[in-house]
Length: 364
Image (tube, rainbow, N blue to C red; front, side, top):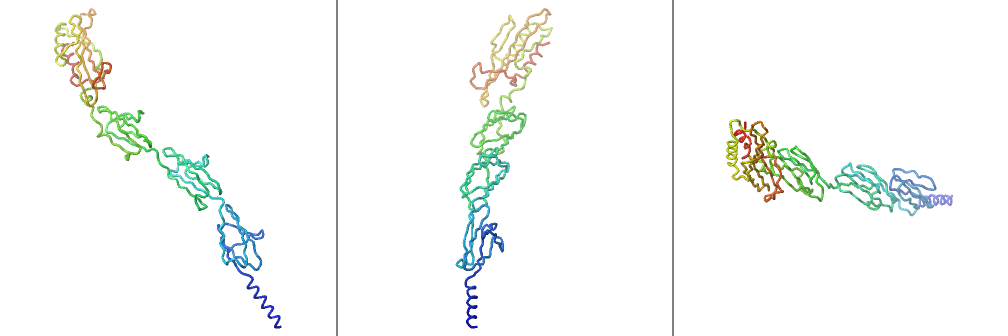
């Protein structure tokens, strides 16, 4: 009996000494643990309790997107084991700001604003973001760029243009780099581009042409140029006379006035403002003054004016008639040549009533 007791005691002690429980934690928690082709149940996500004895147990942990790993648990194993599987595939998320940007992956359109794709170990992909008004973004994404299996790229695109508004307090024409941007309005909007200096031209009636350089690097995005407009002294010193300036007008001399009387009166009146006659032909009745010129330095222009009177041949009705021609010309330089002058449909104010006064003086 004593020998039997000792034998049973030995067997029990051996069972205690030659078995143990090992807690195995596997990352990722979604992995499966396989032993002899069978799935080992877990006690919690990624946590397994394994009972071992003197026999080595071989396990394989595997998960989608990770390398499988085999390991042995035996009596020499620690009571707690951590198995971290190595990823062989990562999930990439690319997000753009603004969200309207088109995202390309390896040259193919993949979507606006945000795209997702997988990248395998040893692999790289090229992402490109395009959006009108922003610099193109280009990056090579590699598997090892980030340690996390969920790789994230938040891309803030850099603007390469910005909208600028220009305001004046009078209707004007606006030009940017020679391109019309508005007419008859008090404001305009346009884009300025990175690395470029744009030329803005504002033309408003009664003011000198305003030229301003605007670049992308300028802090301002809104310009009130009202105070920058300079009054056009040539304009302010003249009146619009499109119906009179450079138009040949015919009028009839009063019946009770002789040719000589009418001529004398007209020549005297004209001489008050034009000192010299360039043509003084009493026989044919042709008179023309010299040019009266006025220089406007700030405007870089010269305005000149002269009058021509010419008697109309008698057509048998016994009426004395004259043609009156008020010429008004302008040249946009202060030392102009003859060919620089062009007709101007405005008349300097000192000649505003010249036509009507002459007609009142002698016309029927």
